[in-house]
Length: 429
Picture 1 (cartoon, rainbow, N blue to C red):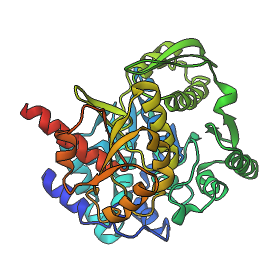
Picture 2: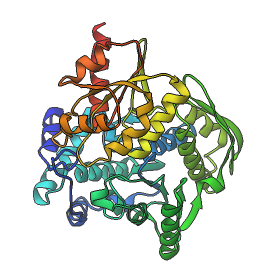
Picture 3: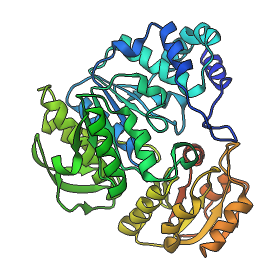
């Protein structure tokens, strides 16, 4: 099968990430049957690390992968959504799978999907499970797509479950309170197996504690297991001291934002747990891997002159984190290029950014779920942010009309489109 045909087949499936209306019913019946037809590859996997959460789950996945690989271990990773290329979703040893491998995986599943239809996300999940079961990486890091309890990734049997910070996102699907959302995320807990929990608001933490007790999971709080001293922020990243079960060290992250220290604290707690039974995981290797971690569209600086920062900020926790990055690393008003999908808490997300937005350019992400510019404009007007609307993202990001730093935010789709445009613009220069 040619790569273009493989992508076309995948694109022909129902993609809830792009449909105009959010998914309102979740069942595991279809993906369970597809995996049965494929021989249940997820049951042949060991050392799965399953990561859920509202904020930081993708960053924790990338940190774990980079640290484990630097310890000399083979890794597999499944993340979603992708930013620029669908192959980002399935990675081996820190690299997206090749076009040839991707095409073979799709070709293998075509007759199975015709017998048991599934969604876009479900097929990519099954493809990852199948590939990892044959390549047998030492560790497979798997990011939960949405929620936890009824997510396709939850058909795996994690050796360690991880729940990063919980906030209000996908409220029409997961619930309107942090307690309700925490209950859904807690569905990835397993009896007698560890679950590492990152820093939480009191109501979310109380629910996770209750769920861990009722499930019989062995809850480990990252704050209690890893002590972090105040971070020093630099123009290119963050340095901090940490006391871990593997030892004490100074860690350098090439990532912007204090929130990444919190994510790293969670990752270090997971690594410490794994190190108890795997002597190959050492502090020096983990430290080296974390110093090299690269995460697309997470406060990513793609240009210095002019300064352009691209982030996938799309919920209130992300909005606060991005505002902190602007304050701590830029300390300047910015031009905010913003677009959102419908169903997001836009006012609560943009609110923390308002004091830093000298002006805003409102655009629509390339998605049927894009929030209309008129509605987005009303929210920005109520927040007192001067703004204009644009029907072309290219003109906003490639030809900035100001010397102020440019910050693109609001959606993974917008971030991916901006990165592609900026990459093409640099190649032409």
